[in-house]
Image (cartoon, rainbow, N blue to C red; front, side):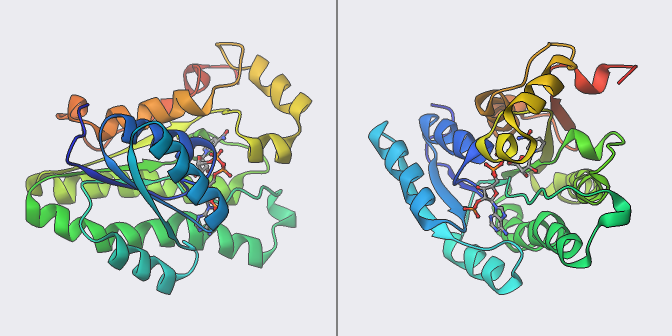
Length: 247
Ligand SMILES: NC(=O)c1ccc[n+]([C@@H]2O[C@H](COP(=O)([O-])OP(=O)(O)OC[C@H]3O[C@@H](n4cnc5c(N)ncnc54)[C@H](OP(=O)(O)O)[C@@H]3O)[C@@H](O)[C@H]2O)c1
């Protein structure tokens, strides 16, 4: 139980990778604040954590709305671990990208992440310790047709990861990112289609899709004291996707 007496906020903790990260952080002893827009899903995650003997609460928030981001930061108060996992991922070819969807991507993935972190990192720095883990994507590290806008938001968060790592290192706050590859979460399966997603998995060097748990384990590692001398990195959890030369 390496996170006993720590408080962790997981945005997008209501499903997929964020839900798994919330469960694992609680299993390590952290009190977990699960956030997202869906109260029903959020409280269900809290119930799962409590059923496993952990402690958690749900705080609703829409990361694309700055007032909601401020309220979340206020309600969360002082946290030791911030997992910026909430993400919108509507894909489109550049020539078909509509402005409303582009704005949702930027507001949720970049602006919401930026101002939530800005609001919460102050107390971490004052305390002299803290860990921020951003969840980005291999789409921000490589060129992916149909994911230009999404990939740009994730690349921007990788850039923030490095800038924040340098900005807050002397205050004892570490900032890292996990870039998931092809992870089998319900919403991504619904978007891409079961068969098409499985086909994509076969092109990964490990010849399979990743599980939400595998991505979450990387998040918890970077959040934990085991990663005590690691800051400013983006760790792909991608079955070797980024290592592949002839993608
Ligand atoms: N699965 C993959 O293959 C993959 C690959 C690369 C990167 N990622 C990244 O991993 C993260 C988690 O994705 P996932 O696959 O686990 O999908 P998911 O299950 O759909 O999770 C997305 C989470 O973000 C929350 N969210 C979305 N828009 C929000 C908003 N405006 N305000 C607050 N919360 C919001 C959702 O909660 P509510 O619906 O309750 O709001 C949900 O909990 C995302 O950042 C995604 O870009 C995933």
